[in-house]
Image 1 (cartoon, rainbow, N blue to C red):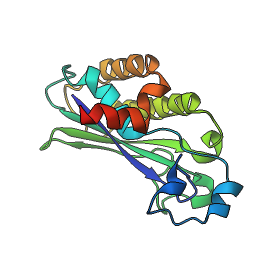
Image 2: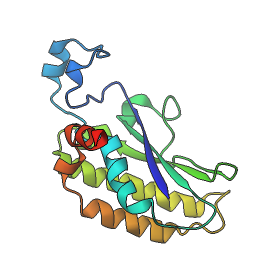
Image 3: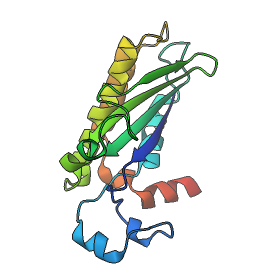
Length: 175
């Protein structure tokens, strides 16, 4: 089983270190006035989870779980404008043997939290996305959602935030 995160954020979400990116559109004063930061590097989380999940089997109908992680101030954006509603959505792609499911994190609740607590919020959003698979209209017949949810929760519980940084992920990817 392969795990992948597609991170979808509102413009209000400032990423740790993002002020140095070439694609940064915010002036430095904006970064100074808004101290909240998204501190997680989702490709590192994906790699960490995949170390444990890739050799495992959670049913023959699913080969990949795609978490569409929405991080935004949903109250400011309103419903259905750029993000899904509170129920999100779940799609089963039987031809490609994938499940796509939305997990949501409300930015005002996590923007000032340390990375460890943001990782807990990530885990809660992921568990909600996994739970949505079990109640979706079109769902895989033999996907062991409870076993998958338990495996993901156990793996995330063992994570150290230092293992999930951009720097560590880049060093790991080079080898």
